[in-house]
Each structure stands twice: as structure tokens, then as C-alpha cells.
Length: 66
Image (cartoon, rainbow, N blue to C red; front, side, top):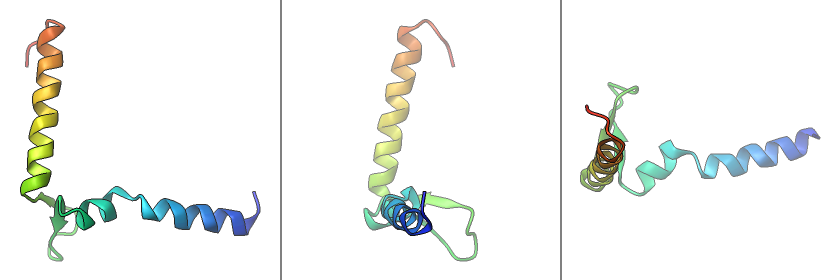
């Protein structure tokens, strides 16, 4: 792959980076004092909780216990 094509793909991939998309959609944020710790905003927490409910339902349907 030519270097120019690589740079184009890299620039395109940055548009879809979950860290950037999550901040733009106001799902998550992080504080400069704690760069490795992401915090859920209300809509992000809602999505996370719905996903966890779905996973728990799938476990229960398949006979697993938490």
C-alpha cells in the first residue's frame, strides 16, 4: 500500500474513533486530571445500562448465572 493511501486511510479511521465519536455525541467525557478514566454522561449511561440488561437476558436465556 502506498504511503499516501495509508495516510488517507488513517485520516478516515480517525473520523470513526470511538473516543472522538463518544465525546461529540455527548455520551462520554474525561477530565484532564484523569486522562485514562472515562465518565458516562446521561445518554451514555442509558445506552450502557440497556446493553448490560440485554447481556443479562442473554445469559439467563442460556442458563448462565451471574
